[in-house]
Image 1 (tube, helix red, strand yellow):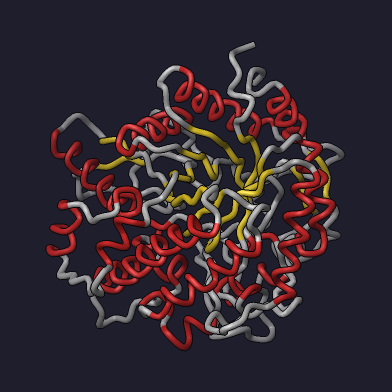
Image 2: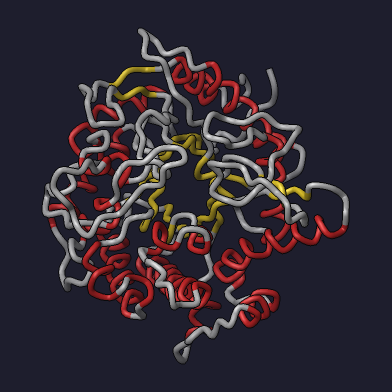
Length: 469
C-alpha cells in the first residue's frame, strides 16, 4: 500500500454533452455543430453535412441518452465514490441559435436538475462551458469564431450560467482543448478553411476572439461569485525528441511552443514574443480592438485543466512515417506499446506533463481527461484488465508528480467514465467507460448500463484515496 493523496483531492470522471446527452431536439435545444457530424472509424474521417440530412446516422442525436438517464448515471457515479464530475453544458440547449437575447428556460432547468442530483450525492460539478459544440446557426450566420460578434454571444451565455448556477457550480473551464484550434479548426472552432485562405490567419484570428471571450468570462464569473474558480483547458502533447541530435531537440521545442502559445495567453495574459514572431512568419496579422490587451491581462485563469492520453515524438527527418490515428503528427516511439487506435501508452508522459506545466506557470493543475479507449467484449462483468492497467500506471504517475515532484494538482477525472460516442471517430465501440452502455456503432442497443471490472477497481482507489492501486 502506497501513500494516498489529500482528503480534498477531486477524484471523478468526465464526459461532454455532445457525446452523451442525446435528446438533440428536445427541451427547446437548437442544432449544434456536433449534430451534423456523421460516424466514421479509424482511417475514415467523420464527415459533416449541411444541416441534418435524412437517411444518415448522426451518433450525437441519441448518444447514450444521458438526458433521460442522468439520475441512474449519477447514482452509479456516486456508487463509484466520485468526488467530482466534469461535464459540459450544451450551448445550444441554453441559446438554441446562439444569438438570442433571452435563454431557453427548459435547458436551464435540465442542468438545474443535473446539478441538484450531483450535489445530493456530494459530487462537485466541474463544468466546461464550450466543449466542441457551437450552435449551428452561429456557424451559418456569422462563420463561427471568425466573427468578433461571437465574443458577445459567448459572454452573454457565460453570464447566464454564472448567475443561474451560483452556489451550485464553483469550478468552470472556458473552452475545451483550446489548442486543438490549430490542429482541427472545423471540429474545434466550427470553421471550414477555404482553399484561397491563409489557414494560419483564420485560425489565429478566431483563437484571438476566443482568448478575449475567455478573459471577459473570467472577469464576469469572478464579479458574480468571487468563489468561482475559472480555468482554461488544453490538450497536453508531451513531446520527446527522437534522438539527442540538436536538430531533433529544436523541433521538439518548436512543437511545444505552438501549444504553449495558447496557454501563455490565457495564463500570463499576453502573447509571447515567440508567438508574435511565429505569427509574423506565417503572414498572420491579428486584428485587435482597443482594450483587448488589457482584457487579456485582467482575465487570466485560476487553474489549468488538461487532457493527457499519450506522448508524441518529434523528429527533424523528412522521410518519416507518421502514426495513423494520432491527433498530433508524431513518429513511432519504439520504447512504448500502442492502443488499437495507434495511441502510445506512456504513464511517465503524464508525470512529465504535470511537471512541465507547473514549472512553466506555477498555478494549480487539474487532469481533466485521461483514459483508455478499447473494444470491450460484453459479458456478465466486462473483464477490462487492460483499462485497469492503463489507469493504475497513470494514477501512479500522477501521485509521483504530486508527492515526489511537488506539483500542485487538485483533481483527476477519467475520460468517458461511462461509455459514450467517440469524438474522433463517432464510434461507440471505442469504449473508455468503467460503466458499459449497450449501444453499438449503428445506434442499436437497449442503452442498459452495467458495471465493468474497472468500476470496482476505481471505487476502491477512491475509497483509499489512491493508496491502493
